Amino acid sequence: MDFYDLHVEIEDLKEIDEVIEISKKLGYSGIGITFKYANLNDLNELKKIKSEIDLVSCVEISAQGVKELKRKISKARKIVDIVIVSGGDYKINRAAAEDSRVDILSHPEYKRMDSGVDHIIARAAGENNVAIEINFHEILETFRKIRAHVLGHMRNNIHLALEYNVPIVITSSARNKWELRGPRELAAIGQAIGMSLEDSMKSISDIPKGIVDENRRKLRVVSHG
Image (tube, rainbow, N blue to C red; front, top):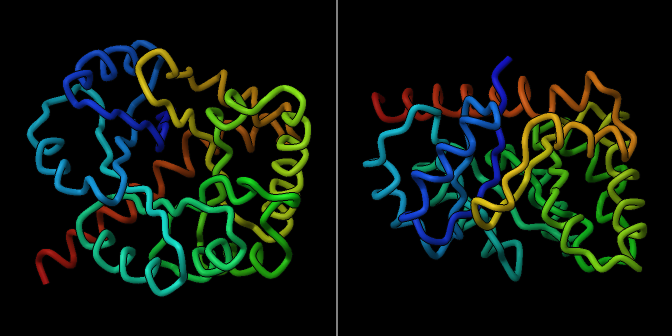
């Protein structure tokens, strides 16, 4: 089974060799090196790196409004393997779910009093194959007194995702090599908040790998078109 963590944020690519080595020891076949939209030019450096595991190019897009979001998606979609939208604002959550060019909606519950996903968003995400991310870093960094609050929102999003056939991916969202987590540790998080063992394992293997393979196929078609 090929395990993928599609959200690893490494601010300094000088650390990439250690990140690759640790990820390999943890059992990953691939990791998503995730850049902020403003740092897209760093993709050129990523392409030069030789690795024994698959390095997936990802961008996390933040936007103040839907128009800005669409503009950024249009640019990023042509050059990266994975497009992640940083959620939280309801309009951004919905716009991301309704856009088939988006691969992952990250932390839709961020800074909200609800889960950020309702039946409208879940239905759109299912139709457009936009995955909802369960982000280990967010759980880790949440203050203990509101952690149960956040986990409750994640449980709700999992319930809706399963109801509307929305892909789920579980990621470490590691900011450095120390925050990397093994596949089974991430799968355990999924189980703890309402996923079956089978679904949890798929969220770190078949689902992320399938997204990567399909996007690379499309990029090849575009580049040879």
